[in-house]
Image (cartoon, rainbow, N blue to C red; front, top):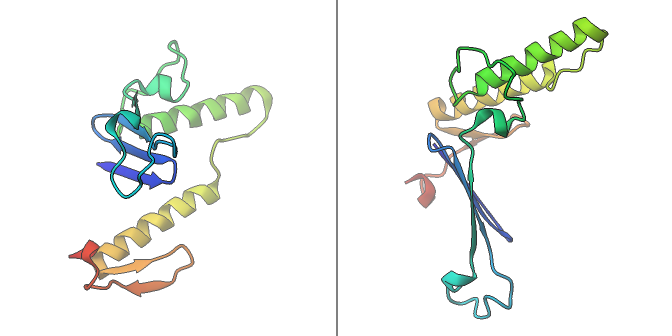
Length: 143
């Protein structure tokens, strides 16, 4: 799996199962004078983030026990369970209920999944407002 985001300041590339994120910072106008050609290789700053250590990425202490089933989506299920268990333990001790996500967040996640599935099955694109668009076969992205 990969996600690539490009913007005016650079590009981020995230890859699974490699668990790596690459950040390429675009050079400023001093480092890239002639914008009609690609920037000089030495002017591009690259930073690589290794995201393999799930506990480090999610600020989970080393002595905290992770659930034994890592789940799917590269341990996200285990992290979600750990955060929920922590919220329940805090509630039992203090009576304060403060989960990281709400029921509304969960419903929106399910809604996005349903829209994505519908887009694939029906060959249509949807937006969050429920609008629905027929994909254009003349678009080179879909060819």
